[in-house]
Length: 249
Image 1 (cartoon, rainbow, N blue to C red):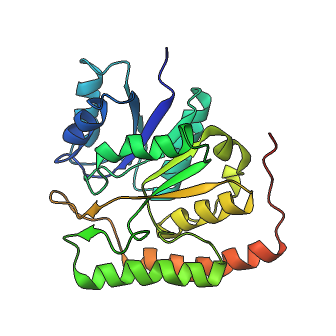
Image 2: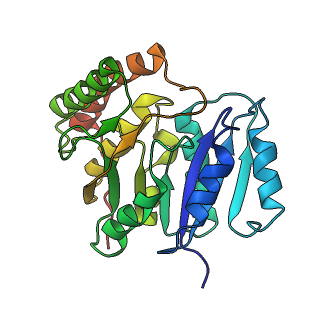
Image 3: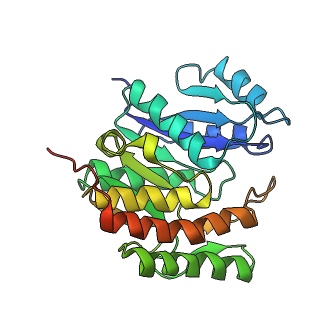
């Protein structure tokens, strides 16, 4: 039986982490998860490591899309979503390369959709308090109150609106107009959740522990946060006046 689940991992200069995260995901025994790496021209050889693994024992489970230059997290995921839909996957995951998202939590996100019938599941840092390890307190507070701000402005009933550890059922990505997704950075995660909710999909938050990266460099920047702050107000405006597609069984 062909695999029905694909984990999309965007990368830029992740040579310290990429082989380990790939091995950790593909070694899970509860379910088979294939991997699609979207690499934005990493000069550190990240893509070379992926190609080496593809030429070995992971030839039928590991795939690579290479792009020229840093084009943004959102566009990387959109490219991955399109690839996953074209290749027939039913469950499509977003996941970081740096082990801030534990591969062992993938089956729990899948179970929320596969067994419980939700359309989208979110690995949530804030559904049971603040489950973040090794982040500076300033970063924790910024992330936590950013999610609070998004909830207040948009009305979303999601505690971790900026989470980047997500499982989508295929029908969510088929229903959302991917061409209309406008944000490229931090706000992309908010926009996808908001749009899925506006389309009427059922969303569940699954509690996870987020661990700050030990290797490599964070790709966060001030511009990413400013996009999110102003983007949220635009999403609220869209929620009032834009007509969203509704999924029909």
